[in-house]
Amino acid sequence: MKIIDRYILTSYLQRLIAVFAICMLIFVVQTFWLYVDELAGKGLDLVIIFRFLIYFSPKLVPLVLPLSVLLAALMTYGTLAENYEFAAMKSSGISLQRAMVGLVIFHVFLGIASFYFSNHVIPYGELKSYNLRKNLAKLKPALAIREGMFNDLGEINIKVNRKYGDNDRFLEDIIIHEKTNDQRNTIVIKAKTGELKSETSDAMLQMVLYDGHRYEEVRPDKPKEQLKHPHTKVAFEQYTMNIDLSQFNNVDLTEENYTSTFRMQRIDQLNQSIDTLQITYDEDRAVFSENFNKESAFRDLPTLENDSLALDSALKANVLQFIKVDQTWQYFDVIQGALADIRKDIRDLDNKKRTFFILQKLINLHKITRDDKYVLTFASLMLFLIGASLGAIIRKGGLGLPLVLAVLIFLTYHYIGLFAKNAAEDNSIPPTLASWTATLIMAPLALYLTRRATNDKGFVNIDVLWVPLVDFVKKITLIKTKKKVL
Image 1 (tube, one colour):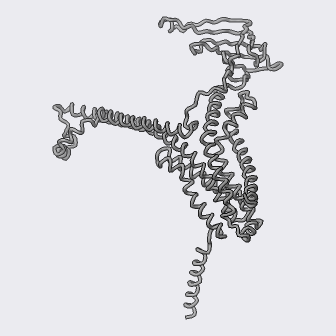
Image 2 (tube, one colour):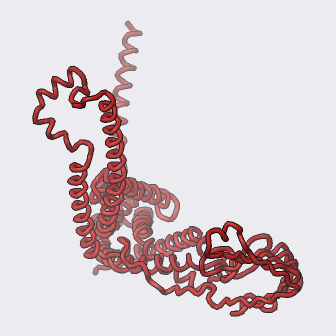
Image 3 (spheres, one colour):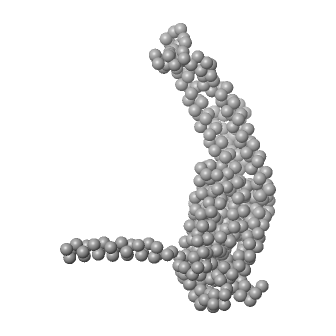
């Protein structure tokens, strides 16, 4: 490697690593706030939260890496042009294309690494983060008895109107619903006051109730007895309850029950899933089409087509003349029956249409996920060419104008791809085309900017439009002057 290549590569990598770290930190913080409702109030320690963010981070790389490459290229080549280092290179016979060769080779290897990352690391991170989210959803809020609302304490639901005393140990106006095996609310306990004899963090919570009643609904076997709504009522001056909290929030956060969603699969697994889903989709459509033709209200139409001339003449006379019945009341019954059959067929078609739409959408999502792994390989190289060429043209480094241009270009690239993928989900456009749309649209821009930067031209040649306009205005002015003289 020559000194000039090492110098440019070092300058670029310093900016790329710094920008990537900053952007990743911003997106991780945004992710935390996005899922804060699922994490807050459940007594999670920092290790669990950190583990969730680590598992979720690989999914952010396809978003952060292209932006980092674009911004780093803009800053690097903008700084080189601003400090007249490109002028020194060109005076030594080194063109812009030669100055970009080293980083182009670097981005080829970066594309290969990103493909491996998207095919192995991202599915693994999706597997871990998705299962961890599902397990965290099973956790209940941290154990605490709050005033004025029912609190789930495992075996009971308890509501108190007031807490007071040391560590809020004393309770007033207590209502307790005990949980039973049949999932029916049959036991209710009410007490005027109560006291917690142990901490809510202990495995066994002891609570003493004073001056209250216990109600239990009795469910007899005989139906006649059930109409009387029998129940038992017991008054007490002191009632001690021992509540087992050992199973409260006893959730295994490492459990993995979900392992086969399309975002967790590699390319070979996605291809297999796509083939299986496509075969199922085609078979279901063929079976439905065959059964519908046999059982629908139109099943007799092929026999009518055999005598099409007679049917045409009958329809010209009266559209319902082909109905052959003996009595008038039978005539109207046949019409009503036919209308009912047609409405039923329309409902069946609508229901099956929704089913096929969901299945087709699932197939398209598999294809989009598969193709995105290939797109990331070329996206970084394409955005590097745009950033490097644009940086050499505008001749500005730092975080001012390059940052604004990078954000605008990246948002354009990102939302083109997003809109195309949304269109592909409902089969408006092919899924493969949707994944490559943004890259195919931005590729001509990359070639255009690279050519103009190599030829030391600006972003847009305004003279192409400005000079003809000035000449036209001059001609109009000259004609008016001649008319005034005459």
